[in-house]
Image (tube, rainbow, N blue to C red):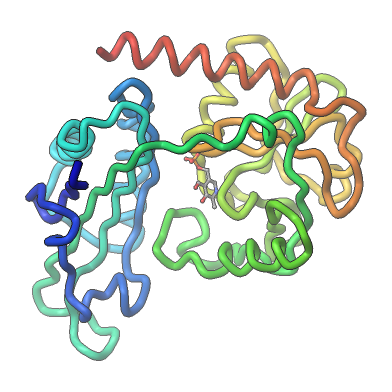
Length: 290
Ligand SMILES: Cc1ncc(COP(=O)(O)O)c(C=O)c1O
């Protein structure tokens, strides 16, 4: 079946979906995006992704001619048009076409693209073995206005991933410019210490992950102590357990940080419990929403 993409209000075959070579998303990374996941044709926490999208748009002073409800419908229409159940969905907004310089065009006309593709799960083995990670030399700049949003300027995180791969690792962990732990290249990070869950707070320069928020909700529901605070890099290596979260991989155990093995079990028991709670919650929410 031919892939259909949503481009500025119209669903069209992928090969007909064209954007200009003058598009500022392409020229300057001038835009923001969201990555979502659907389960049985329903996007998990669509409202949260759209809220974050609109928050990001406000931070970069980009207004679009759609409401959150309209964009939500567009996401669902794209899923339906492609007859997808388990899908990866990417929504990209750029400031649209501009001139040669960085000054804004008089009347910006944003480019909005929604792509939905069949979700390819990570191999089971990765969840059993956990990821080998290392602390990156690249730091999250706390004074940057784009530190906490999903902007199209993703180069720092891409470079951190390249550096990790060159070191034979699966994933990079970024510190911030104050030297505290921030996040993974495409994920938020949690550690477990003496039965408590610890994760960098928002002031640490993290992207406020939708999955991270679910983990915090689950911890509160289950009466597990959760600390959102500054985390020292040394705490990572002393952790009993460590895991990463994002929309696509959900909860991914970390087995190693800079060659230091994390905990004694592989993966840790609380990590596995949270992974189960997360799956249960997703199942319930997508059923109720039907
Ligand atoms: C830098 C960064 N941090 C955190 C996350 C996790 O966010 P979410 O749980 O909303 O997918 C992502 C997701 O891609 C990310 O790119």
